[in-house]
Image 1 (cartoon, rainbow, N blue to C red):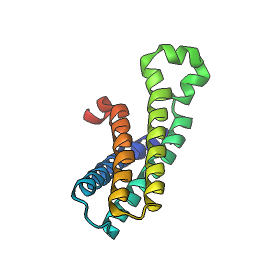
Image 2: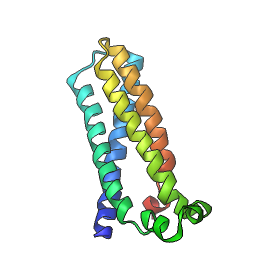
Image 3: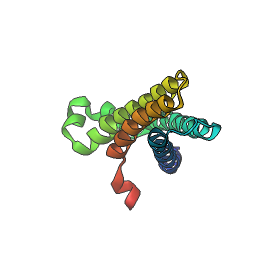
Image 4: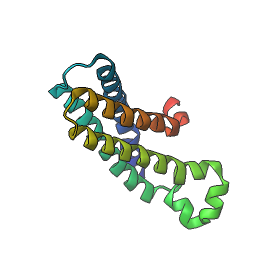
Length: 147
């Protein structure tokens, strides 16, 4: 079961990253060019929000069953996990930063809906999605993705 969840989490991450990048670039473009906020813009931001929430749910399930996350904390204790950089990465850093990124995407999406001006909508999405994208890129396990 663990391998299946890990497989889904790993490959869903490609879609998640792609949509976050597209939504961020779209919001940045809209911030600079000042077009009308269309249904396409709304949907792109929404789909990025949806796939990131699905990714977090898959990730939380994986975290519970992972021997290098919750399993390491249960068996070795938090003190030992924090001393080991690899265990700390998978048990603390990756999940925490990804969760913060999803919270930022959620806040940005929620705030943009309350704006009336299209420029403000794009700016709000651009700020929150850009910060989230930087956080996501900083905590992707690149060694697993490249190999």
